Length: 215
Image: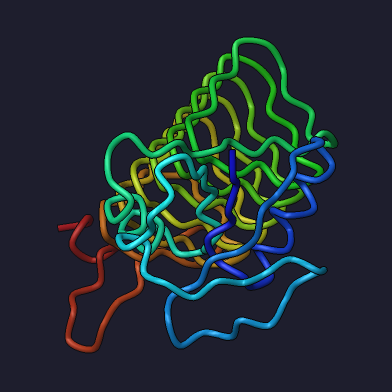
């Protein structure tokens, strides 16, 4: 069966390295029309729309860093497509850990026990995920993120490099946490938080949440 990596950027090359370390034979890369089709490490890069792919036996890893883009690609390929889960052999994965189809665990990560990770997630190098965490579909963890116990990361949330999350915190769907932030309270869906401790970004004219909470 053929195995394609969708996306030929830096993440695609990291996924290739992880798959090769697992003994998987990669058939090549795929990109959307208009992107570079220069070979990568001797592998062909094909440019065609996913929905036009004619090989029903093809397997895929969606190696694009944006969760929305991975979601669109998964929908384009449709039901019945086989997505390969990537677990780099250098990752330390404990007991009672479930990892959904198409999720990429890249490099030196530590996932302890009783952790649930959904489909098409991205766990970058150096991340630590403690006990009883739940990560839903299309979640991104940037390099060196640290999740304490019982953290919930809802669908599509994006955590930047070096984010730390305190125990029991819920990070809402499709929210963004800026690099280096320390999250000690729940994050609203669709919001963006930054800083230590993490606070929502305010736009000009928005009320200060701290003032509202004191009234």
